[in-house]
Image (tube, rainbow, N blue to C red):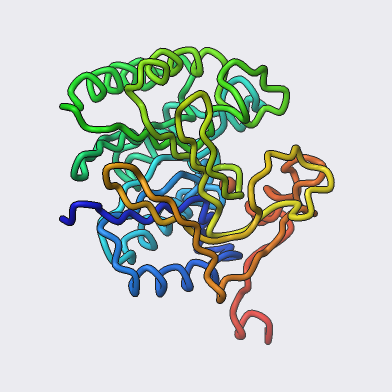
Amino acid sequence: MTNSPFVAFISDPHLSRERPFFQFNWEILIDELAQRSPELVIVGGDVTLDGATNWSDLEFAKEQLDRLPCPWLAVPGNHDIGDLVSCAKPSSRVTEERRAQYIQAMGRDFWSVDLANWRIIGLNSMVFTSGLSAEAEQEMFLERALAEADGRQVAILSHIAVCDNSLAEKDATGWFMPEATREMFASYLASGKIKLFLSGDMHQSRDRVIDGVRHVWATSTAFVTDMMEEWRPKFGGRKRVGWTELQFGTDVVVKMHEPRGMVDFDLGNWVHDGAALYYEFARGERFRGFGSAKDTVA
Ligand SMILES: [Fe+2]
């Protein structure tokens, strides 16, 4: 390992065997990372198109992640195990069963890894405020991982971002961590135990220091939504597909990459009135796969 380990931070690839809408960009990413040779890839969630209701998506996402040219570690997103209990309709929420399926396909949903003088702690942000047993287990794990960091600087990886501009702000958009979770993090952040917060979910890249802590949002490798920002909340990020290079030295160096070969698919139309249309395509209610030549001849 080098003194400044090179980590590729990717997020929201939304992979699916039956509905491979974003496989093109994934293939470009695989080629690009094979050339760049990171030591580790970390994945900010939403690895699947709809793994919460489709086992095949989880299985396929694992196969695809195993094609990366180095080890990888992922945290789950709402598309993988269901949404936060606070902001989703009951049928879309995270459950024990969905979490268990994710773990069966992908491995651990919260973890810690040490790279030179850094410790990266990956968290399952979908169980925050869920009351599931995993929520308390994870909090204990986090406490221990921070206490035993041995002087290393700590970075947290979560699917959901902490806040827009301030830890104290009220979230009127529904895009950020629940207030109770933010309070749980606030003391760790204020005491300097956490230096860096990495998240996905937003499908836009952003790098901002908030209350003394750096918050880096990874864009999606798959698609953006409402690129012209005509109707979605504006968070000031850059809406282009790509990936994020992280060099973990004394400080962390962050560099966004937008490979020329990738296509900036904009799904704004699908989610303009909520995500219903997205899921109609993801679950095959409108799109039933490509079929085979034989099928169409018959
Ligand atoms: Fe996503």
